[in-house]
Length: 470
Ligand SMILES: O=P(O)(O)OC[C@H]1O[C@H](O[C@H]2O[C@H](CO)[C@@H](O)[C@H](O)[C@H]2O)[C@H](O)[C@@H](O)[C@@H]1O
Ligand SMILES: O=c1ccn([C@@H]2O[C@H](COP(=O)(O)OP(=O)(O)O)[C@@H](O)[C@H]2O)c(=O)[nH]1
Image 1 (cartoon, helix red, strand yellow):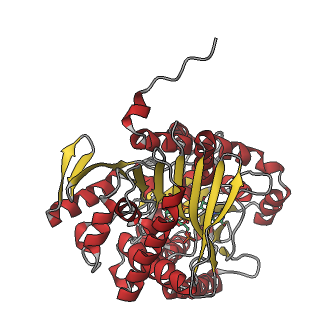
Image 2 (cartoon, rainbow, N blue to C red):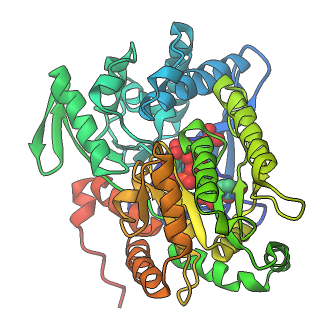
Image 3 (cartoon, rainbow, N blue to C red):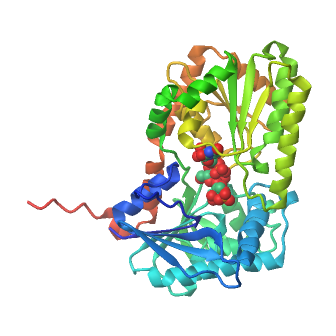
């Protein structure tokens, strides 16, 4: 079996005992790396504070090597905060209005991709299979090809791919599109993303589908398809099932004083639709005043990308909206909303999801949204809560038994909240069963195996397992 080389902006390092950090993606990729041996390369998350990036630091953990590089302040500003998070992120989430394009930042993005390519080439073996993750590193395959790398290279985009008219508003869209077409397998979260990508090739007149998921563009052929990412469903459900014994969860339950809990969990990001959600919740309370004092909405929102101005201003918007709501509708013994601006560990989140009657996942646009899946996986099968889910989250393509809403329609979302809180047990169970079956059969291990089956060189793919020695 060939080695696997994973490249991503962030690298989830294992703890001192060698265990991967919590989170489906990290666990699944570590399992694949452990089985085949390989390398996980990426940015260390630090900057050197000097004009030169740091040397590649290699750390060994069994069969896995972690290859990390510190970037310069300028790299972080131009590549990560700049082009990746102020151009590609808003464009892919259909927010042209929030895009801040600057040539200097675009140059920094391509420069860091060249740096990654320069540093990866000496580590590669001829039959390694390379799997690159996410929008930070789209040009990497093309840079590797320029350096003579002939290995199979796959790419998975964790965020949405936008419609052609939106994508074409990026001044260097052609270089980005050509960069994607230099991979052998390009994975998207949903069929809608694949359609949008195919639409870009067609509209630009640079490529065409060949059938069976194959495309020809810029003089080469490759596979593009949807590979919706899963979670570690069974493990997460088991943690949630034990959570009623957890002191923190018992205290939280006590603090609710018999009120029904609604929960939202999102990085502080404009794509997550948090202000629109608060507005819908307020509409719900005003239109169904019998629920005043009977429900509590907990919003868990760790800060994210705080050096990007649009994120800093989101912080103020959400805090002031939460304060306004509590000021307007709260009473001396009840606040309608609890707002936490820090990260909570996933085992505790599992317990909070299970405690909640309603999960509010209402992004304006989201590649997948694993919180939606985690909320479902954490429920008590005998008395499951209800997921209110934006139709614009990738997760809605699979979780179609959730109450699907349009986050731009505050009134519709308010009605869905009321429906969720009053849904009979039979209907809750039926909806939950349907979603849970899907999450169990399409978990993150399966996702990883599906992608690898497409990426593996054909000779490896169809070779039978060697017979065990007699
Ligand atoms: O690394 P950060 O800049 O702090 O951002 C965190 C991650 O955000 C994005 O997550 C996406 O991937 C999820 C898993 O596939 C998906 O469910 C979600 O819809 C996406 O937004 C980003 O794509 C990651 O690279 C970041 O690490
Ligand atoms: O306080 C928090 C908030 C979120 N998460 C985790 O962060 C991930 C968020 O992934 P998602 O796909 O929902 O959105 P992203 O932040 O990647 O855009 C999920 O696994 C959450 O359980 C966490 O561990 N603690």
